[in-house]
Amino acid sequence: MRAIGLGVAVWISCAGAALAQETADDPFADYAAGRYVAAEMGAEAALSKDPANPVWWALLAESRAKLNRPRDAAAAFGRAAEFETDHTRRSYFLRAQVLQFVAADLRAEAQAVVRSAIADDLLDARHSLDWAMVTIAADDDRAAQDILSNEPLHGDFTRQSALDAAYSAKRRGLDQRAAEFFEAGLALDGAEPSPLSDAQRENIRREVRELTRDWAFLSQASYSSSGRPDGLVPQGDAEVMQLGAELSRRIGGWQGGRPCSLFARVFHSEFLGEDRVLGNATQGWVGLRYKPLAALNLNLEASRLVGFDDQGIEDWSVRVAISAGEGLEPEVGRRNWTYLHAYGDISYLLDNDVTFGIAEGRYGRAFALGGETTITPYAVARAGLDTGRVTDASLGGGAGVNLRHWFGGDATTAPRGFIDFDLQARERIAGDESASGVLASITFGR
Image 1 (cartoon, rainbow, N blue to C red):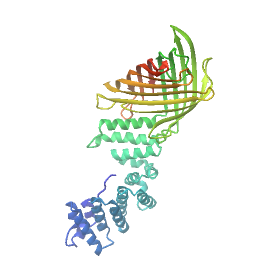
Image 2 (tube, helix red, strand yellow):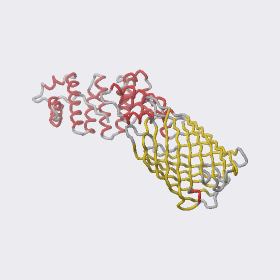
Image 3 (tube, one colour):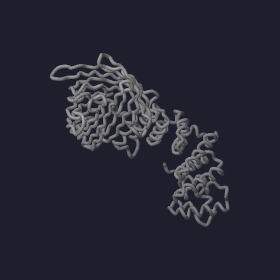
Image 4 (cartoon, rainbow, N blue to C red):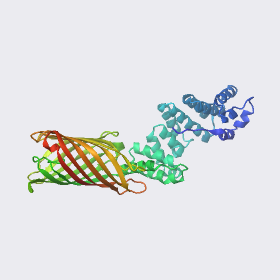
């Protein structure tokens, strides 16, 4: 929570100095000197003689806030606002009360003050950037974004207020507004005495990338020495050359980390053996993909399979995929870092009654080659399930290397596209022979 303090100058402007002269001691001087217990006692003594004076209530509130008693401070700020007749100072006391309620983890009470202030036309909270920021602190993003729809307020942004407004808009699902606020925060960073670190700027650029990504394209060419690399009905343990692409479009934006996308993909596979083509298959999918949990990269997918030749199949598929990791993108300011990627994927073909499953874990070290290019040697373990094979399960392990280049970024948006080359070799540990072999792929994403 951002701290709020009235300061000695504000109290002097409220005639605090004159009031202090009426007491034997000067509680304002005690407060300025950091003697907050004495300042609190002095304010209480003054209030026993003058209980309707907002200046003494404000001093009492500030002293209690400094003594880490936010609930008591909030009550005193409320009394200061109750007796204050100047609307500017009353607005200030109420904002301070909200922030003290937030510090005391009394969100409902904080939001009640916010609603009351917004309904009070004399406070003009709907045209106040200060009230927008306090409302964000009270976890009322709906009311905050209602205030921030007043575009002239954006001209008063500081870096921090712009970033706070951006995260609030993101939580409300206002993707374009959030991206604009993030970009404003980055633009204002140069005027700050303590600029953001390169890593902080990169994290914000990645926020902008995700908020503004409304479509995606992925294409891949791959070779596997031990059957189907991914996604198609296998043909024994033949070598496979595969070429495919997927185009997806988000429906309704980022949705607070729960996007939904329509997609279409097609893959063509050439099954090889003894230097000749044994067969081929061209397979299409059209479907819907949904990420139901903001904090977990879990995707649910339902699709219709469309066969484009005799080897392709017509079916319905349901699929669940999950992944997690660290060090998957360049880490700003570092030459090398830990790389960890875990992936699981299981799909079921309803008509053919076939289940495919893959679980792969990689652990390695990524090295920056300059710019946006990395090379990552890694160890890999991979388990597979394919009920269309005679032996339906497999487990293998080995090593690989990945070379990736990111592109398409700018000053406010992290790179959207990448191209990488991945090569791995595995030995069978158990199960089907497909656990061993060589897998090479070139992938382009945007």
